[in-house]
Amino acid sequence: MPAIRFFFILLLFFTFQANSQDQEQDQYSHFKAFGRLPNEVDYSLYQALHQARLPMEKLAYMDTIGIIFMRTDLVDSVIHYGREMHQIISTLSPEEANVIYYEQRAYFYEGVGKREIGLLDDAIATFIKGIELPVEEDNTMQKFLQLGLARTYLAKREHTKANEIIQKLSTNRDELSLTLSIMLTKADYYFSKSNLDSAIVTYNQVLHEEKIDNYPKLKLHAQVHLGIIQSINGAKEEALSVFLKVKDQALENGFYDLYIKSILHEGKIYSEQKDYTIAEAALSMAYINSVSWNRLMLQRRVIRALVDLYVTKEDYKNAFSLMTQDASITRMISNKQNQLQLRDIELKYETLQKERKIDNLQKEQIKKEAEISRQKTIKNAILIGFFVILAPIILLLVVYYQKLQAQSLLNKQQEELNKQEVQSLLQSQELQLAKTSIAAQNEERSRIARELHDSIGGNLAGIKLQMNNITHQDAYIKQLMQQLDTTYEQVREISHSLIPKVFKDQAFTQLVSAYITNLSNTQETQLHFNVYPESEIDQLDQKLQVMLFNLIKELVTNAFKHAKATVINLQLSLLVDEGTIELLYEDNGVGFDINKTGKGIGLKNMEHRVETFSGTMAIDSAENRGTVISISIPKA
Image 1: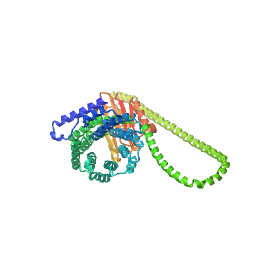
Image 2: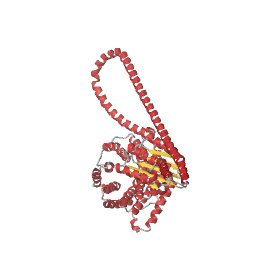
Image 3: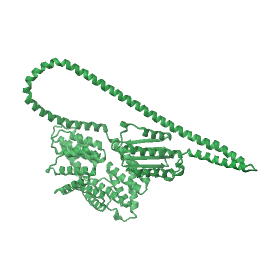
Image 4: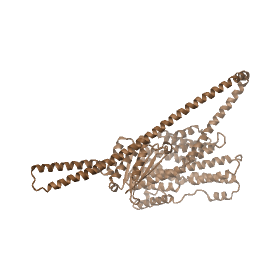
């Protein structure tokens, strides 16, 4: 996979170089691709780290290097030094001075790096581990960890969890960096929720801060998002001006992440203005740099912008290649996540918060109980004797009640299991009956068509030939000949009517496009259908065309019923070298966990159709992440 990605980067770069030779050089001078990762760390720091002997001295140098890499957005190096700090900390005692502080810093570096690469679940787990460290409640570094956790939930679009954390974070004018970071996170929350008016107000509050120039990265972050909002509101030229200024300042300060984001949104604006050459150059440079820095989340955003551009240009081959690359990145991110570990850590974190609340309540309760314990002493002495008598009776009643409760619960569970088993059997029987009925109907229709065409049609044709040989034809014989011609044509019409007529009267790709267009006119969901090469796909066997059309209808129908998607992409391609037909489906809907929900009748029907033609079907989906379905069928 790295070799394929490297080849694709080279292809984009040389394509851009070839195109730019025919253009004015200054049109592209503000797009820069970095052939190597920039290193802003002074060599003396590495030398000092190498020469350091004491663990705390090494941690101090590593922390300094980590801060520099955080500023330049080289997240792989940030993660590396976070892990190196953990290695040293594991050899130290937690009671040693500053150990907890550096451990917080290590978790912060790892969490930020994983989030920016795209490993959101791992990032959440890392931030929570840092938050759980035993520190004072008003600890500044712990607030930065909580803020990192909130930003990661925003990246996952889990707005409720993010907002709960943001609302609990307190600001302090003595800690201006933390205060501005909290304000920016609030603004990003409004932006993610499409509350653009509140986002504009909050970003401007950050920019109007008296000492904002002391925090250039935070300032550029606010400016680039205001530029994005201007673009959304239609002020394209003003937005381009913002992105050009942000790019120059980002390069000057070494903020390469903001540089890529500016190019990405600049390319989108050029694409919307139909200036496709400059748009392709900008997005290509953004993609090359995002791959160089291993920024998986940015790669996906740039790839999808390039796909939209190529679809607009009707370059479906490149669009399909990029969609395949996007699916590969999605699988790469998914494979690196550890969902079970994340759920356990989140549960531990929530449990810890509850235990702290319970502990505070218990302390208050102890004080109150101390006040009234003296008054209860006499009453308790009297009640003890009474309870000694009632205890056996109460115990019997409790045991009997628990037995009744257990039996009732067992009966309900057994009844529910029986219902589920009956429902499963009924669904299986319905599916099998439907498959058998369809197969039998198709076979019978084909057999009748063959019999009418070959047997009866052949006999009528033979009789017609013999009657044509009669030399003396009176009026009666001519009338018989006319009736014979009419009967022969009726037999042909009946035999041909048993085969779907719509696939005879209209090309396959036109038929599917008309179906997609009709649905788009009646639904709010955006449907995109791309086919390549169209002429060769129209020449496929008619049975295969019928099966592919049924698959497309089933995919779109399932999306409308369950996915709640706003965009659906369908790509049908004939790969000549592999000798296969590839159908790729993608939506941005709610997705599903196939291990929890299982496969419904619709998915099983599609699998059966694909298996009938010796094909394969792969499903990639997760909750709140959309669905990708890839189907491959041999051409012959």
